[in-house]
Image (cartoon, rainbow, N blue to C red; front, side, top):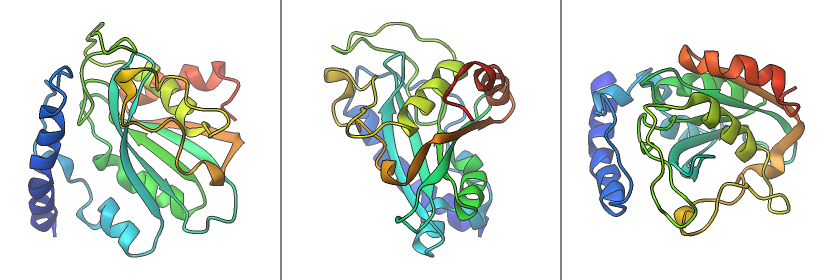
Length: 212
């Protein structure tokens, strides 16, 4: 099963490289990007999980507070007639969303909408930030606190209260609100993380009034 999932990730990887090549202004100099590194629990593939009817799944990019383009995935319960509490998950240093998908899938099955990100400079996310016009700014090695706050901003965004960092030409092709917004209860938001991601979320959970 593990080798099967590695083969699937290997087949997907050229399309990721093509996405990056189409935006030469975005730097992807990330550590440890390989098909093998993208496989965590081989029985918890997000695509297979969704195809089996266990929940909803959406893979996309969005722009963080620094203007960097981040890879993210949303997981949610199948039933779209209800509102659910939301949780954002911030991985640790040089960890990817795929490795932590087991957490999101389990939480979605338990009745949560979950957003997992690749932090800036990790996984499929770019290294550098940008102004709304696309001008490159700073290139931190990683910035889990800003990414966590951006994830909260995004998970509670709606068409009438859009995501505030999708600005200018830098955000072209990225969503301006959470596509699962109709099933999110914005009054019940939690945050979680692992390793360096846990260090980031701990103070934010005390400081951000949106976090329940």
